[in-house]
Structures are given as structure tokens and as C-alpha cells.
Length: 303
Image (cartoon, rainbow, N blue to C red; front, side, top):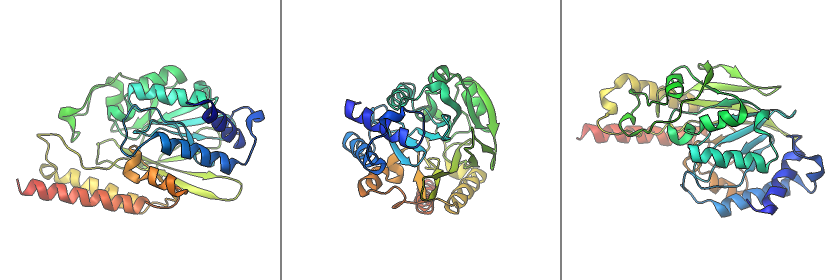
């Protein structure tokens, strides 16, 4: 990360009371955020490499993007020096996440809770590295905990035959649909959205600045990807569960949509347009994935 982007990050973080040095808080926070987002869009392309470093930027208020160019990791500040981190990326990507935390002058030990979206190595393969840095294990869904604890893929997973193993990590707690977790005065709601994986989670929370509050949703991938010999049509109950996840996602209060693959929700396009609360929302995202699931089932029916 360039010296200029580090200064921007520190200043912007300090402006929300997130733990960086107050002396760095100079200039209009909106201008700082614009510059940080511009640097990200100049560094990162659509569907970029999973481990490619990208600079951190503020999504809105106390919500930050600290992932790589191709895989998201989300940081939420409680306003009193505590943080929640969602996802790690791959093992190599987790080092990018830690570097971005360092650029924001955040001590990993100030992260009070680590959450996950779904149990695939590209999004959580670096959880052991994050645990070593933060001193915390991960909070998972009840359906996913065994994957994290053993590092072995779930045989029920539609992509089981091609999934890579990952380093095991301690599971400190499990959640179910509707569980509320958090640190300090920060609260995030777990929404079980199985489909892409059996243990997938979507997370919802409010981020507030001095003028307004927005509901942020970090929606799981929910893409109907499979590896042979898996066929969705051979698992009608799983398809019903998948469709239910999509229907519930579409109904969520959702001012800002974020996704584990940022390009799946057109994040770069929305950054370029200047407002992450505009463009693709949860309902549109769910509609796209539902259509893809229908296409997948039609393809299988024709085979």
C-alpha cells in the first residue's frame, strides 16, 4: 500500500473513532473516503485475483472493506476500539487482510469476534492465520463447524469433489438463524442461507454516521455451483432449502449489499458510481441467483 493511501486510511478511521491516531484526522472525511475508494478501483478489476492486495476503504460509517481485490473481508467497528471481522480469504489472502489492518493502525488483538460467510477455503482458508493474530477462534453456523474444526470439506457440499482442505481452526461458538452476536454496542444478526454450501450465513447490521443509519447486508454467495458428480436435481430437499434462502434474502432490509465475491454484487461499479447504497440490492441479487439455479436445473434435466 502506498504512503498516501496509508495516511488516507488512518485519517478516515480516526474520523469515526475507530482507534487510529486522532492527529491523523485532517480534512473532510467524505473526501478521504472518495480518495480511498478511487485507489481501490484503480488497483482492482472486476473478478480480480483472489490473493491480489487491494487497499482498505470505508463502506459506510463504521463498516470497512479490508479484503483482497477478489475476495471480501469486512471489518465493523464498535466505535470504542473494538471490532468484528467477517471472513479471512485464503491463507495467503489472510495476510493481505492483516496488512490492511496494520495500515489502519488496528491491533489484531482489538478484534473481539471473527465471523464467517461460508465454509470454502477461498473465503475462510486463512482463519487459522487470523486466529493466530487475533487470539480468537471463529464463530460459525452449526452446519459448518465441523469443516472449520477439521479442515475437511463437507461431503454434502455441491462442490465437495473439488474443494481444498484448509488448516483447522478453533470454533468458539456456533449460531443459527436469527442469532444476534457482537462486541461492545455493535450487534450483527446471523441469517442462515444454505445453498452455495450447507452452512452458509448472511450477516445483517446497522451502520450509522452523524446523519443517517443504513442497514448493511453481507449476503453469502448463494451461487448454484457444483462439481461432478453432484446434481442439484438429485437433491430436491436441498433445492427447496436453497430457494427458501433466496426468498428470505430478497425480503431483507438491505440498504448496502456486500458479497464474498465483490464482483457478484457489482461492488466496483457501485464504487465508481460513488454510492454503495445504490445499484444492486438484496432482492436483485437473489433474483439473479434464483435464475441461475433454475438454469442449472434445466441443464441437468436435459442431460
